[in-house]
Image (cartoon, rainbow, N blue to C red; front, side, top):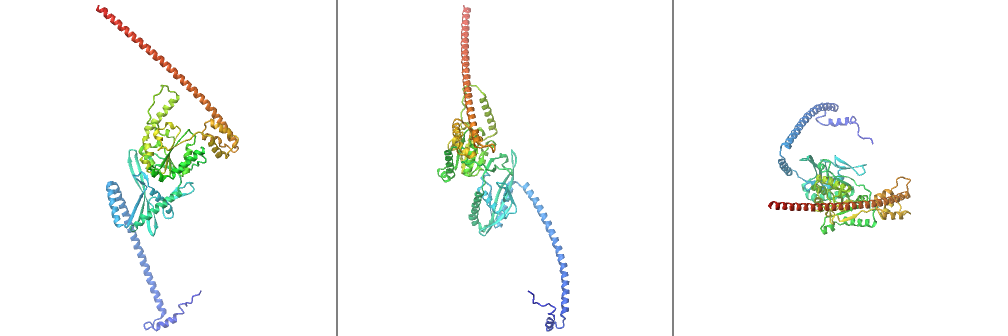
Length: 584
């Protein structure tokens, strides 16, 4: 579209006529007036350019002065702060900071709420802190400038969370709030050396006019959403306890963990189906029994004692229980625990929905039979087996001296007042020799359910055959059933024989290998039984010989004593006779 405005040169005559009609401009030439204005404008602009350069120089000088004052102020502040931290006593600094915060509170209109990572004298991790961390990890990805990256389960992606000393703002119901992630480090001096203690906490800041809404609605919303996020993103883990010397390191805590990925289930567990169903029902009843345990006045926990020979599936049973209930697993290694107090701290740092496991408890520490009286030996004979037992006992005594966890401390930790601090936990002990355990350790109420993991029988074999060979019947099943009833073989050994060793092996090859292994085990058991009988007979023979020898020695001793008495009496008689002769 073309413009309808005419060039200014075409309008000069009309403008000039208009100016002539004015009394004070009728003699003025419009063109000369225009040129004079243009000249004045140039002079004015030149003056302005000179003034702008001078103004720019003045601003540069002012910025240099301000920068010098700022550097000087920061330097002085850092110097005074160093003097304050080094020379002012800690108690005085606490009081000064306390009143400084009060003065800031009088001036500032904001309210600050702090959520610490640990509560109860740094003993127990705060559930509110964990929920807030989960909530902020979801909302901080797009807002925070600094994030922490942690590896996810499959290591192909990372999970981002709020970094230390970072802050984000969000709006809730039209009210702006601010979250700050803080960490304080304090050096501790002890007889074991110098350690660093980190204490993390979140600070929530909001205007005091919105106190009621934030405290009654927003905080509850954050905790609820954080717990929901934890349930959705929960990755089950396998924990092991660290040495107490690393508890206060900047990268170590009481427990280390890895993702729990054991594939065992009750469907793949080699056990009698009726027994498996009974255990599953017991676990379901426990997991749904929060109100029931509260009603009867018991802590929400349950103990399981798994006992049986090696290779019978005790560890596999624990994995199947964890997968069935969707629980974490804490593998507690008692030999690294320094004392009873440290044991309590470890158990307090565990979470709900978890299984606490102490495997081979008869070998972990000298906790077995501490209340039993020693029995006198029938004889002083020490064969090879007794020597080995004495060596094992000496080794346990050496470990007990280095480790001050006692049977009483373990009992109080799993079943005393401290056991009620956290709920929904299962405690599992495993042992190969249940008879060696102290009765107080495995009584009902502590170990509520005793599960015997026995040798493989026909029903367990069928489960293994279905798992490894994907068959449910075979012509060799009857022979295998007969051999399993006559021979003790662990499920681990049966599974090893059923597993194909190459692509050429089929079910026939594997089942024949199992039959051969069972026959060899049967023959070996027969030979061992015969050897045991011979050994027992030799032992009895040695006892008889020793008894006979002892009787002969006793007889000789008695005869010698009689002869000594006779000689003494004879000597006394001879002495009396000599005295009588001398008297006469």
